[in-house]
Length: 275
Image (cartoon, rainbow, N blue to C red; front, side, top):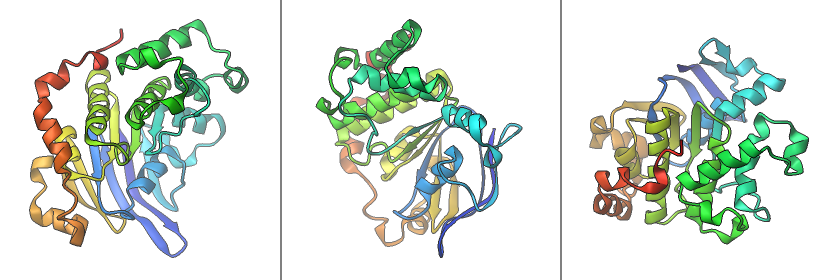
């Protein structure tokens, strides 16, 4: 169980996260929604300890995340794999090496820097790419791939960390509807098959409703909604988004999801278990 207790984060006079208390049960798929500046990205960075809370506690089991340092902090970040909107791949390196970089949190740094990976790591990286239908691109430079492919490489890299939690910060914000669907399907299948908790910030309501078990709505640093997608009423959407409430539905993504259908999504080979 991951628990946030009265967590606050300030940047100067701006309160990015304001007295947030919530819990994340193992195995959930949670979508965090809200306007730009609502505190969504800061919330994920606080959990991963890319930022440190000014007040409150983040507790995982018997671990006080805010008090971690050194090797313990590196181990925590390995458990909390982070996926970013801009992929954060090393463009000049091939896809397989980019995936293997995911081992840097739990392997010695120098061998990773010189691309000295074990046969087991290489096999696991290949399986992760195969699972995401990218094995044929393993030896290509990362910058030769499309945006959607690069984001799936980032997901494969996250899997190499053997995480218990994946934090995805606007993973589909820069993608077209088809690639957005593939990325969200990948995250959802990993969540269901591997029982990995996924917390993802999302710009559109459709993606949150289609793929998440639970939605957290943020406004001005506060959590103003926390419940199932079906409980998200029009009045609550207005409270979360204000004047932007009419522009947060991505109809093209909705139509793509509807055309694919849930049974077809579940049967895609690229998202099958690799073991």
